Image (tube, rainbow, N blue to C red):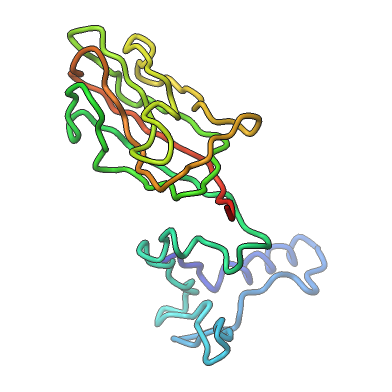
Length: 210
């Protein structure tokens, strides 16, 4: 939790006063002491929630962040199929140390499921650890279902996948790709086994009605 000392705003006001400034209406913190709270009505209208409160040391304590488990695909879906919504970002990470590097399709342990009817419009492949191999290995990025194994990045030679390299994914706003079924982000190793590499994948998409 973040805290802000209750004395900070009055001290700022006092400094401005001694500098000859008009401090009428100067920002003040809520007048909360010793576990008092500033409340708001909850979304259901059935009770209240504490927005901020003062702890035993008379410091303002802001409400805790939502639990990570709250940020699920279902929670991110709009309440109606028509209306305002937000794009979504899928994030996956392939690591040779975790996922291995034998030729073929690999679903990373740290992946994301892109839902059916998702329209992928942008994204980035971020190489944080050089892709290495004793042979002429390639790496492609796609999904396990709903598109293809190279729908996000065509097979790319290891020489083009050095540490720090950023590559755009195939789908763009001008040429989007629509998922026909839900699928996890995958990588596919071609030609020769890998001996190292860490690759992050970010995919921006929105979900269509049909």
